[in-house]
Image 1 (tube, rainbow, N blue to C red):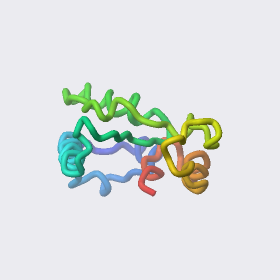
Image 2 (cartoon, helix red, strand yellow):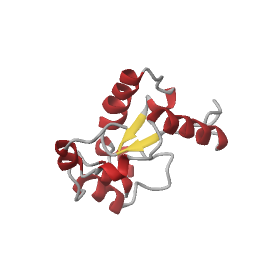
Image 3 (tube, rainbow, N blue to C red):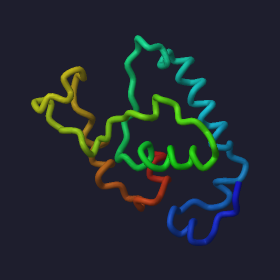
Image 4 (cartoon, helix red, strand yellow):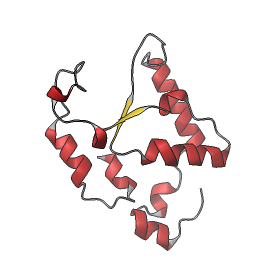
Length: 125
């Protein structure tokens, strides 16, 4: 793992101790794939999708980092539901197959997170 710069720590809130000893992106992606297979989510007859709070992680960051490292991006990372673009009312039609819209606390956190937009710490809660 690279040595974090003070700029990176200031921007993200991530310190070197959080990075040291952690698995590589390749190892993490392999674990995700193993989990997806174990849960039956790779079966073509099973419908599943990631739900995000914004497009950045799956549209820009993950593909860019995978390209930089020469890693493939699994097809299941190429589609997602961005909660920031989802109508919150079931009367608007998007939640037709769900029992109800997402909990207000989830939506509130998505829009009013206390963390910096550059902080991955906000993604942990």
